[in-house]
Image 1: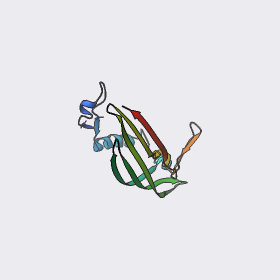
Image 2: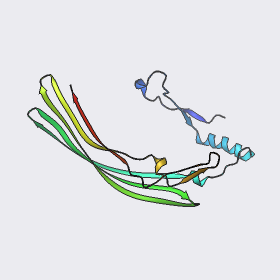
Image 3: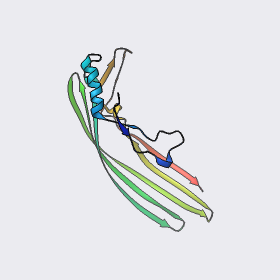
Image 4: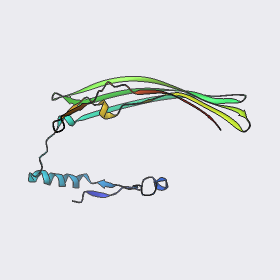
Length: 173
């Protein structure tokens, strides 16, 4: 069945590598619903809502960044601080009851970048920073999925903390 509403605009333009997909088909929701509804109406396929497969994660992220630059003789650079507050809600069914876990956390991520002119033809660069990466939404889900076919179970944890890393970089050019 034709459920396409045409192609997307070209993506990536000149930046696309040879052979890369630069357009996708748009899904026409009404046509898709008609196709699926006809299959369900004929009884060929039966739809059952699986509460265990449902989860929803909502994150509201507010960030503030401050930066100060400096220059003294042959040394220059900047110092920065990024303050990030995350409001996170993880909603899922547990034992047939839909519930939500809310949390809020704030991180302070400093950074410093320096350049030293060792000679007219040689620069020494250095950077130190603290960075973070949030867990995936699947890992943050509060649901538990049991697969009787493979005898496995998987679940997430809405209280997982981000992963933090202290980065250091030094280079000469």
